[in-house]
Image 1 (cartoon, one colour):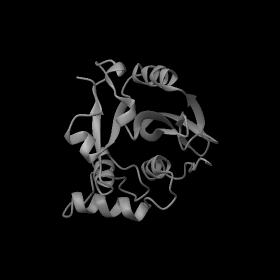
Image 2 (cartoon, helix red, strand yellow):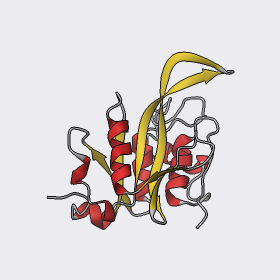
Image 3 (spheres, helix red, strand yellow):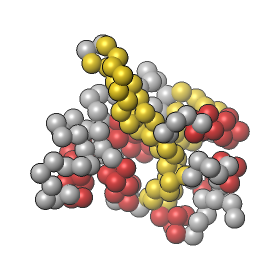
Length: 177
């Protein structure tokens, strides 16, 4: 199976992470996430769920609704817990939110912006599907995935969202008791 991988453009990492997660270029568009952001705050003069210039930069609320539309749930992973508590066989994938450097016309400025990217098992390996990468990066087996996620979670302000089917979330099948 060929791995689908969208590359970063504008501030549309949320769109790219969802399309990469679902391995489908048509899973979501900028227009889809804009519509969700307006649905979440229909009367807001400045929409708090996206960039005010309309360039993207969607927040976690938009991600959650987008995933719910496809019968998936977002479970925030408490980084104080061990990743060993995850039942990987019941997890569809992961979405990571990691602060990212901002470049303006090729010059890095001392500001960080949240960046979304997906991690998912495809065939028999896990892949980092970050849209800022030139191609998907093979993480490897379950043990290597846990090492990769542990390293990410050791960084400041990184958040891990566990993506599971709705029934898995309802029955807490994504974690060991």
